[in-house]
Length: 432
Ligand code: IMP
Image (cartoon, rainbow, N blue to C red):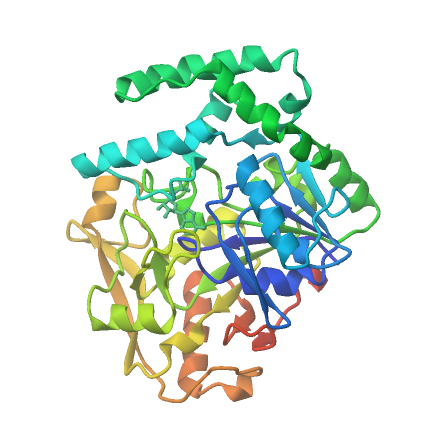
């Protein structure tokens, strides 16, 4: 028995929701360790659909502890709204089943506003990132700049006013520069005091909770958000999110030492998608891209934006296997490829006349690379709902084997429809 870390191995939206739900049923504790309410998971349990952005998936299952770790940036308004929405669906969120790290950074309204102002300003100059406008980046900037307001600060009315002054000195200078109205000290104090009583009951010393639970033999599931290619260091910078999304962050973002992380499961879509701006070497702007988008319902859960679609990029996923230390992958949405005559997999790139086997780090080079493909015959049969290898057409098995070989990691789970039971289980990550 081991703990499990789930990460996205591409640009997010790999279909983590279904797999995390399947795993959270087997877990005792489910921990978010980075990102915030820029993520979006839809869970379907007994025909009821639950949309989660900030809360860990385990929250909808009785008897589990859901944890928001210190690596998360927490919008208290979004948290309270999500708790209320779940309550209306009959899921009770209490300090019994939700714990929030007392050292997690808060997203304030001024962060959300700054995110939007910057994106609007950048739209005019053609340099926007295409963020979710949730204030994620600005909140992480304040954390690293050592001027953030954290959950525990809500309980300390003596030091809070000084911290508010400090964060405002920075933000009001930025707002003046952007030609925007300044924010008053009173407005931020009012914002914080209005939510303090409802957030503080959830506060927890998360590193200690996890240490105790680990020693007791609890199964801990770490639920990553976004994807490895959106990682602030390892992704397609600057078109990335502002956190480390790779598996190592499960440790730093929760306070549990890396030795106890266990199985690293990389959720991997059988083709590639991306939302927002940035390089995407295998993007298909033709009717095949359209086919994948329509058949795969590729629209963002958080912003509703249409996702860009393209062929599977094995060079990129191989890089994610290395940067995360992926033990095995969960391959999702194989059924979306049903019916295509030919399938292509990217195995490397041409850059300035030379073949390379990984995406270079420089933004200019990333924009110039041309994918190098291997081509495979498609299959006509439906793979929807396959629950064993015997249910899959020979060409589909060949595709899966080729993916495994090219990325250097085995398939642990193969998902063939949004239904939880439509899954081929090769290895149970908790038992590995
Ligand atoms: P931010 O995280 O809102 O700052 O957005 C930065 C980039 O990450 C943008 O390209 C977003 O579209 C992308 N992004 C953020 N969260 C997700 C997600 O959950 N899935 C896919 N892309 C995301």
